[in-house]
Image 1 (cartoon, one colour):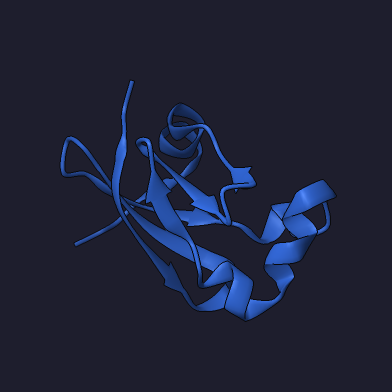
Image 2: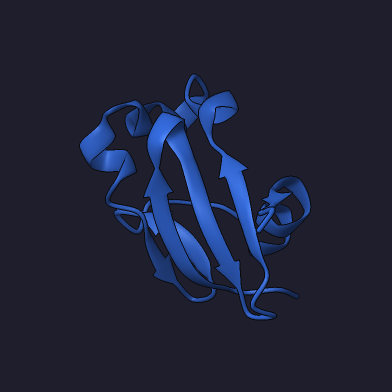
Length: 79
C-alpha cells in the first residue's frame, strides 16, 4: 500500500501528491466536487486546507480518500 507523504493544493482543484516511493502525481478533484461531502471542497479555502493524516489526505478529519485509490487514479508528474 502506498502512503501519501506530502500534498500541495494547486490551481483548478488539483493536488500535487508525493508518495512514500518519492513518486509525484497530480490528482484532479473536479469530478468529485458535485458529490456528497466533497461539495464542501468547492470553497477554495476548504480545498486549500488539505493535509496529511495516517498516510492519506483529508480535510477537517471528515473528508478523506483511500491512498491506494489516489495512487491509481492520479497522473504522474512529467519532470
